[in-house]
Amino acid sequence: MRDRAGAEAARGIRRGQAVVFAATAGFTVASTYYFQPLFPVVGASLHVPAASASWISTVLQLGYALGLFLVVPLGDYFDRRHLVPLLMLLSAVGLVGISVSGSLGELLAWCAVVGVTSAVAQVVVGMVATIATPSERGAAIGNVMTGLLLGILLARTVAGLVAQFANWRLVFVGSAVVVAALAWFSARSIPQIPKGHQGTYRQLLASLGHTFVEEPVVRRAALIGALNFACFSIFWNTSSLHLSAPPLGLDAASIGLFGLVGVAGALAARLAGRLADRGRQLLTSLVMNVLIAASFLMLFAMPDNLWMVIAAVVVLDFGVQGSHISNQSMIFSIRPEARSRITGIYMTAYFLGGSVGSFFSTLAYRDAGYRAVLVGATAFAVLAIGARMIKLRGST
Image 1 (cartoon, rainbow, N blue to C red):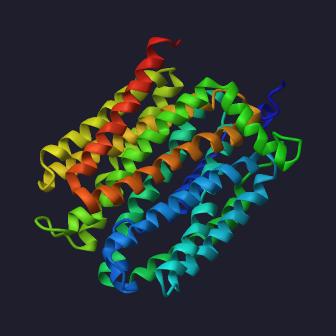
Image 2: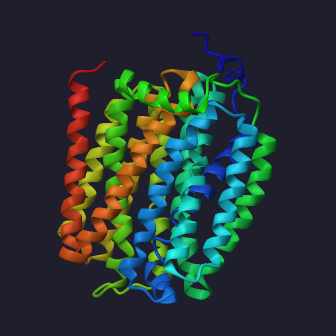
């Protein structure tokens, strides 16, 4: 099949486009992370226990996974110049709904809306892989993922500071305004890209299963990505609970500042992108997975030492984002006409893993304490290492 995206990709990505795409990915996905340092504050505001408020993460991630499966493949079906801005505007509506919620049930319903529509960030990632030239694809994906990661990390910091000195609801009002503004900029920045699928929506979804069965690269990347993001979610879903409890006893603003510590992950995204362009995805992925396991061993050794926690966050974020970019570089090197669908498969598995991690961590923290959480996270990390080592032994 002729690469119909080839003519479009040959133009590459201009600097202005790169900035808009990175900001779009960063601010939309940030909407699913603002709550992580806020569980104690939101719980008090809605008169529910902080541990119950942490179910918000599970709902957001399940919604995001649903959006990845049902919405992201539409990037191969509809004109992305219309699809991306529409999803962003719907996300802005959901953020406003969160800001006015008066009960946990109402808030969870709006969180589901935000989770589904925030999957637009991954439509942008697949789109960038199509627009970029082959020689710049890894770096281009790395740049967008750097913006996405900064959105995730700064979301925690901004949310913690706003909640500490003003009101947690203002976080979502401000986010809604920014996302709506970016919808306008994205509509003006996205070029025309030929459709990658000419059939019906039902056939489009059916093709996800065919692609999963036919492409072992996608299957293995999906498994490793799911395990990695389970680790990531296990830590961040319980971090505010652990850090706010004795002996650390940090407030919301201090917990939010931990997002800045994870900026190392943004550096990993750029480094992994460059290494991917040199054909070193597999080895990079293995090294990054080892770092993830090491971060939880560090936490298990000294869970109440603030400096050790900071060091572990740096290692964890670096490992998760580096492995993620390596995985994406591998899956985007195949079937250019189906990049949105491949993105949907991979990222659905990725966030299902995150949902499993959030669910596990909530129960483990409640029933067995923080060390049990860390043991479970280490087990997920070791499984990811095993999956990657098997591939290295039998691969090109």
